[in-house]
Length: 164
Image (cartoon, rainbow, N blue to C red; front, side, top):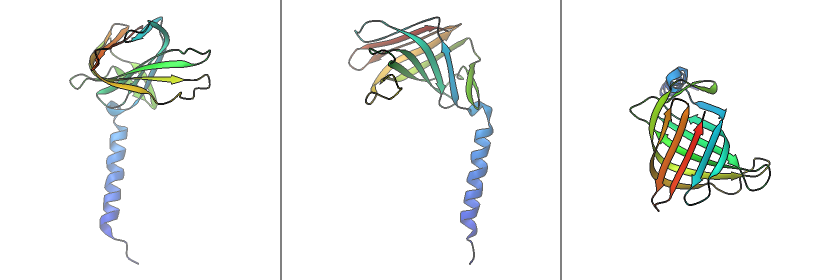
């Protein structure tokens, strides 16, 4: 039985193209995580919540997820407030290798397009689906201070701030 050449050629090309994009360190994805010395966030008119952990997830060359993680209502549970930030004209302030990232810039600014809140129980299991909102806002890293602020279509203000 003869093997068609065109499908084999397409498979070969896709493997080569995929390998070259993964090997490019500028396109690497991953996560930076740190315990913040000072961290707080607020959802709309709700009370100011303290947080301890800050994560920055490099999704693409220009998109970063900035997550502020605090305690939930029940012991051991947690609440996450995630800002999705895009900086097309500026590089992301993370260097990532094998999924682990480090901060490589002291200053960075990005536009926020959406914010999501997630809740997890003491075992780390999600308590329902995340609530997400389309927003207009920004995230800024200045020296070691990270700040995100956004306004939802309803007028609600969502903020997160941490000293890294």
